[in-house]
Image (cartoon, rainbow, N blue to C red; front, side, top):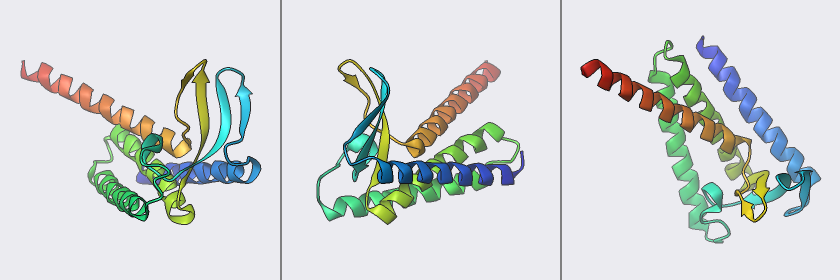
Amino acid sequence: MRTKFYYLLIVLIVAFDQLTKFFIANNISRYESVTVIPGFFKLVYVRNDGAIFGFLSNSGKPWVFIVLTIASLIALMLVVYYFHIVPAKDKLFKFALALILAGALGNLIDRILRGYVVDFLHFYAGRWQWPSFNLADSSITIGAVLLLFIFFIRKKETCIQSS
């Protein structure tokens, strides 16, 4: 795959992420929920001014916003760096990094423009509830799982070859 494919993927994920967040923010009141699959999935508009899964959310402290924004920028720069040094033939690795990059960009855009990240996907079963998240979070998670898979497989292959 050519590098243009990954850039297009990044742009499409960021655009879809921002469009869904815009739709939620403009059509659902804050904390309102819309049941999609009863007993399992609903849309809910949540403003996450903290980190992953709401960690440090609602602290009201300006340093939290500054630290999270700087940390996001640093992480984004590292992913961009690795994205550019990974050889084009390493397609799965580049794909995983592109997913992480797109998700990080989507949430960073929110943090900078809104001062918080819009979360709206909420899965639950009975009393078990998964914290609300968004498409950018999903992209980051899928990319990270792919990276773990790649590292695990490569380590296993290295161990087998050295035996």
